[in-house]
Length: 219
Image (cartoon, rainbow, N blue to C red):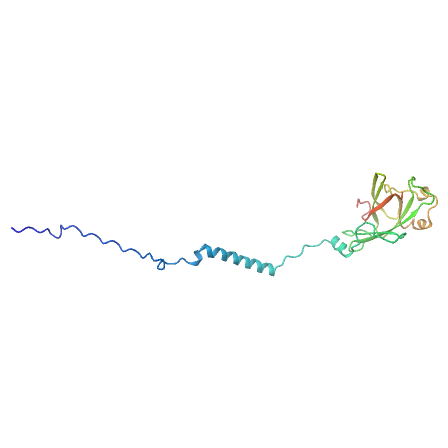
């Protein structure tokens, strides 16, 4: 008897061939788009923003800060410091300043001036209450006066606001009678009594500051 041959149907299946390996060559791999590369995109965006900002600032420069009117007045009048301006000996002291909004008697730009002429009271001496008379010439309707005293370690300060065209004490701004305090006022003082501010003071007090202000204000 001939030996039976195994049928083809019963034969074991042939082993599957291994799948083909994909090429691992980097040159063959697909490159990523540039816009997905952070190392390129981020610097590019920053650069674009910088160009846009620079262009905007060039076309729209920042306006200079607005200067207030009082500052403009002081720039126009460098002497407007409210303290005495140096003058020649025996000449009237001169004060000037700027106020905004302008008060009565000041210029439209707020500038004002005051001249002060000093007179000694005849026959007076240092220990007396009043030894000097000051005549103020100004177009201001009211003034704030600041007097200072310093002698042998003693300091004093007097500051008040008064209307012009009257006679007052330099210690508190209260009205005084010229003839009661000064028996023989100088002729120039008598002429100014009805048109100027007159202040009686001790010559050891220094007029430190003057300000043109509203009537009854505190300066």
